[in-house]
Amino acid sequence: MTDQAIKWWQKAVVYQVYPRSFQDTNHDGIGDLQGIIQHLDYLQKLGVDVIWLNPIYRSPNDDNGYDISDYQEIASDFGTMADFEELLKAAHDKGLKIIMDLVVNHTSDEHAWFKESRSNTTNKYRDFYFWRVGNAGNPPNNWDSAFGGSAWKYDEQTKEYYLHTFSTKQPDLNWENPQMRQSIYDMMNWWLKKGVDGFRMDVINQISKLPGLPDGPLKPHSKFGDARVTNGPKVHDYLQEMNREVLSKKDIMTVGETHGITPDDGVKYAGFDRQELNMVFEFQHLRLDNSQHGFGKWSTRKTSLVELKKVINNWQVALKDKAWNSLFWNNHDTPRAVSRFGNDSEQYRDVSAKMLATCLHLLQGTPYIYQGEELGMTNAHFKNLADYRDIETLNAYQDIVTKSHLLTNDDMMQRIEANSRDNSRTPMQWNTLVNAGFSDVTLWIKVNPNYSTIKVDAALVDKNSTWYYYQKLITLRHDYPLVTLGDFKLLLADDPNIFMYQRHWQGQTWLVICNFTEQTLNCPVNEYLNGREQQIISNYADDQHNNLRPYESKVYSM
Ligand code: GLC
Ligand code: CA
Image (cartoon, rainbow, N blue to C red; front, side, top):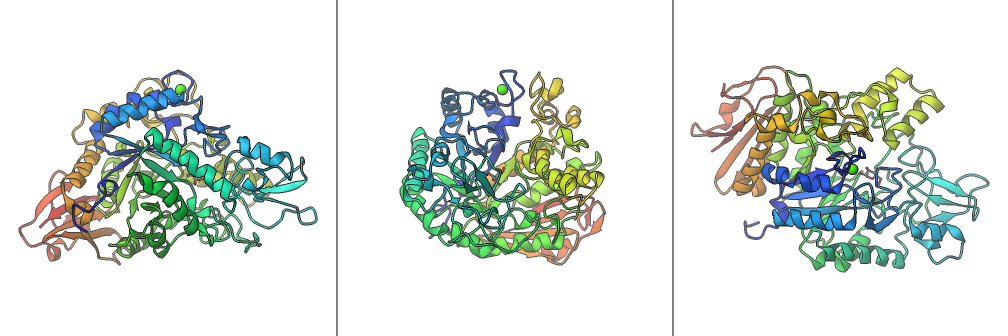
């Protein structure tokens, strides 16, 4: 690829805003669009190019906005369409793009289509969803919902079941229906006409279901990535059609959320010549600490660095020249990266957050920063179930502890503390005012008590902060084509402590070295340097060359 041929989104850094937890401006304890407008300067200063907004559409909020009751209205919690237009314009004026979350595997059960669909078996919207008669009083098949229990709910009105692979308030749309698909494309075109710059597509590889909806193997608590509902036979036809009808019409960016895919699948979804998506979020690297059996994500395993490197290497190599990677350590569904892969103790939090950033941002692909990651924000460490809000967490507790007594309260609470999605959903930490400056009233979810030390205002006055380190990494990406285009080569693949790789482009080589442990290690750097190297960035002030101090990361150019 030449420098000229590359697309804007290949050079971009994306910042994910979880609007509910970013900034409240109207004193209701919930973040809002005016709050995002207030902080556009902040994002511009950080240097990011694109903002991805989690869903801001009208929603009864059974799953924090991923249950949409009107795709073309703004949730009143967040503001009005006028606020959105103001945000879009203000962002564009600052050179920032905005991509929207697109949730079209399912709607809310309060969406007008579903209300019609549910009303009688002959309604013209009936077939927009999956309705089936039961099996002698049981659901039509044995599929589980990702949030626990059967994926089918019986509906009194017409005495049939509807499919919901997530909560009962998130009925799955039937992509077999051409009118349904056209309605979705019309809605997407409407947003593009408004000027949005692209879409992040929620669980997009689940839109094509297996014909006949057959029983699948029973996998208790497996959650997500289930072969019964992912990568169905027509998913690529649908995405190619969507590309023809919508995506190809404007110079936008798209990223699909795709659980349960391999690098080969990734090349299909995001291949340069496939006319589908620009890139996908794969989850292999975030599933290595799941338990192999039993409780899925509710596990206490640690990710092995050797396995992590293997997965990342597979993706870097398989997509090279064929497709494009997205790079991320965390999002609104995961624990905080520094608590999970680094070390959130007072001693090592800052240095390990910088190390993780170095490791990720110098790979090939488009990096995503989840709000607060640039401060090294940590897991919430809430000990009481009453402090959690997430439907997945609350349902899992019900299933595993209350109903089936598979784990004790204490055991499950530890797993929740490590893995709950609410870890990433606590409010953004701006300053030491009440509630971290997020809001001055009772909040929808508690703020992390560590905001007295981890906060924006302190980060901005300390030139050595994690924040400025992210800013520098973003600048490196913008300044050096090698970061976008360079070949990737993994070194020391079997080393259990060090993540080391080279990037190579037009006679220039960068060496990236990251210590993932709190030990001081000996590192054979000289073998890979030529004596004329220069240090590009490091999270320690001086260079001890062969010595790698706890969580040290450094980058040399040759
Ligand atoms: C995706 C979203 C998650 C949501 C689910 C159902 O995984 O990221 O937050 O609960 O889809 O829409
Ligand atoms: Ca508000």
